[in-house]
Image 1 (cartoon, one colour):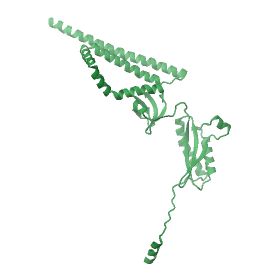
Image 2 (image 1 turned 135 degrees about the vertical axis):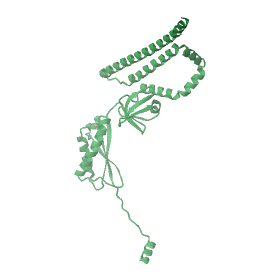
Image 3 (image 1 turned 30 degrees about the horizontal axis):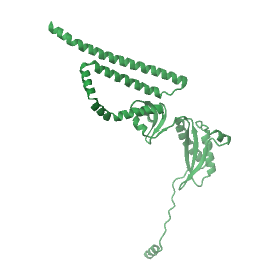
Image 4 (image 1 turned 90 degrees about the horizontal axis):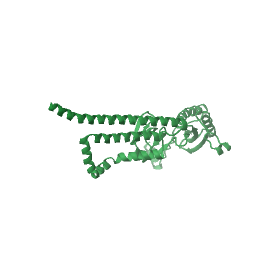
Length: 298
């Protein structure tokens, strides 16, 4: 009988601790999912009614999740007496612990701070097409506390630390104005009619359905063409022409560029405008003494 009472007394505290831990975990999960649902619902309504940027709300979701799980972890530690004692001893040596943690988590804190600054300053937002340095281009899918997720055009996800993005030069193709101007470059032979080639490029570019009118008000009043074509330089065997074409967004600009390459090439072929290939004229100069030696040998 005494053994049973001792066993019950030993089991009761363990059951109580286990119950507390389970309740803490359940409350944390329910609270986290509820808050994320409410934030997501508010974000969708704001986006539909007022066209508000969703980037801050996405970042807020991650902050809420991290905060809830941090406090739930602390609550679990204090729910277990052995862990509580261990935690008190750790706090007693807080100076050494802080130095160790500060050194070990330096990169993590740098990423968090960089993420906060990116959300506040907004060099880009979720859905923007950006170029980071010379190596990475894609659509921003998510901005977390530690990293940013970018989907490139091969549908691969690039997970980049926030601190690295903050240190790089960023080209945002959607900041303030989605329109983009593309350069359509072609070279023609020196024997080709340059006026004919320039007019042909202008007509083909202006007729394309993805081309938009990107002229300023004063340029329209001065009757500037929708698409300008200019001679930008000379090569060893070619004259270099460039058409300045506007598209509504980066996706349309890419499609426009590739289709115009085909259409202009076909137009040049039909109108006998030659696209050059490298040519070399080689002349060999004989020295008089070499010429005499060759004559004597023959």
